[in-house]
Image (cartoon, rainbow, N blue to C red; front, side):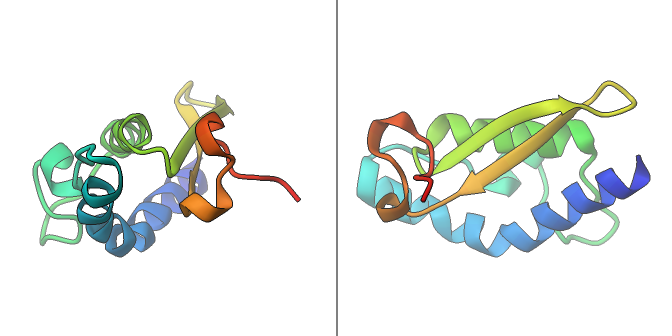
Length: 106
């Protein structure tokens, strides 16, 4: 269980630079505002003595998925603690399948 949380946290930290750049791009491309991690979590990821918990991270990815056609959030099951196990796909418009909001499969 701890490993799953660490992997989710690592994914959030690694995706942060791309997500910080995403809001300006999305507003320019779609006119839709995309929430920044800071606006949802209440602090900047990586700030001293601040760590987002499972609920905050999954909530952020769900808000991101709801606001951007380039982000797909799927719940693929539950953890042993009953928490949602999410797969988040962030893709370009060229790699997505139009209005289905799902990345194209080869």
